[in-house]
Structures are given as structure tokens and as C-alpha cells.
Image (cartoon, rainbow, N blue to C red; front, side):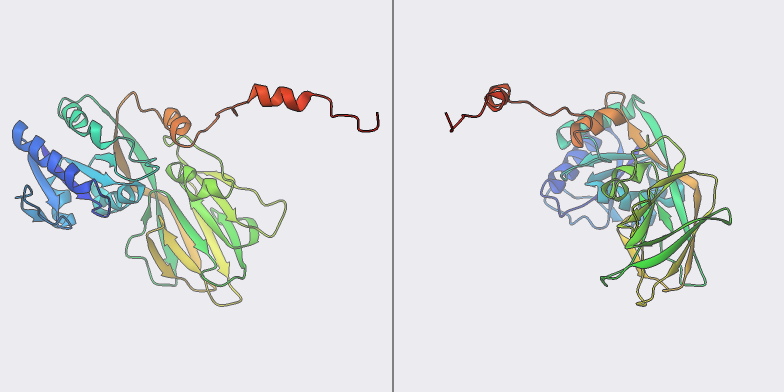
Length: 303
């Protein structure tokens, strides 16, 4: 089997994790290709390749870093649909659910076909009458916002050419089910199971008490029309690819024709990760001794 490695060397454990993979592949007779951002160390006597070459030569790509590294890895793989094994070297690690201590065991299970593939939908973004982004595909979300100016923008949302509603807000997030636990969640959007096929439209700080996030089926074409009176607007893909956007522009968002494939193991379910990492559904801990004290009648100072 041929393994590719994409690593974030801003993480302190990245070099050791890469060395672990190199040694394991060497001991078990597997080929390994390392992305060219790897700086060779004493035990890294391996030829590095570009990201495009990595995606041609690899059967599995191992992403070492945080969720941002996983997003960048998905973007690098593009339409190749090579399965990604995520190892968390960051903090939350919602997409990268395994730890470095589980790395060798995960490699063994992958080569033994003891895993399943989870397909995640992507968003495709088209800018109408404007400059296209270098990367148009989003695994988490597409965000249209007001930029660095502290003034709202006006946004109109359409689905299959039907007018839905307008927002006066700081911006609008169009998220996938994968992105439902990211920025969209922070602005009050719902959590969706990542195996669903749907879009979430979540306004950012809307100037209205009645504006709420909406869920659309994935087969619709969403169109976002912008009017920014102060002349600023930003378009961002997955929080990593950004551009200044026309203050009177239009963006069309559809489901992409390809998917991202994550390698998953049965014991790491989506709901288990929600409970462990986001403390979802956790009941408050009650200090019963303190609660009993609070129940006591206050002293009557007039007696």
C-alpha cells in the first residue's frame, strides 16, 4: 500500500509522528510519499513530492495536524477522492479524531481493511461577474461577510431562483453537515449528522429578532446577492481561502460533484465525538452540599 503524508509542522509532535509513519512503513513493506513541506531530519531520509504528485501516487493520505490541516488536505486531494486518515496534533480535533498514540494501530487496521469510509459532501462556489477563487470547494462552509468594517451588509438569499429572504447582518454562512459543528454552530446553527446531504444558511449577527438559520436540501442551487453600502465584502472558503468580493456581487453555491472520503473506525461515532469534545448533552454537576445550604431559610434579623 502507498501512503502519503501531509503534516502541519507548526505542531510540536508533527516531526515525531512523521518519523513513526516512516519507520512503520519501512518495517512493514509499504511505500510512503511525503509532502514537500516536510523538512528532512536525521531519520527523514525520504524523497519529498509536491501535493499534486502526492495525490497521484498515494492510496491513503495521512493528515497530521488539526482540523485546519484536514481541510487543507481535502482541498489538496480535490476530485481524486483518496481516503484521508486524520491524526489530531491540535486542540479540539473534531475532524481528526485519532491521537498520535493510536497512529501505528490505525495504520495496521487500514492495511487490514478494518475500517469504513465515510463520505462527506462538499460545496461548490461560483462567483458571478467576478474573479473566481483559486479553490472553489468547501468541506466546512462558505462565508460572506462585511470584512474589516464595522457596518452591516444587505444579503438576499434565493433557492432555485426563488426568493427566500433578506438579511441585514454582518454576513451569512452556508455550511455543510460537516461544517455544522464549526462556525455555523457558533452563530446558533443546528448540528447535522455529517452523513446527511443538506445546506445550512446561518446569518451572522442579523439585525432582526426573527432571522433564524435555515436548512435546504442539497440538490438546490443557492444564490446569495450582496449589497454593501460601505464598499467592502469578503468571501471565504473553509476559513482558509479568502478574497475581497464585489460590494454588489452574486455567489451561487451548489453541491459539488465529488466527495471527501474519511477513514473511520467503528468505536469513534459522530455522537461519541460530540459528547467527548463538545460536551454535548452533558448534565450540570450539582454540588448537593452547597445546594442544601442555599435551601436554608435566611436569618430573620428582626427577631
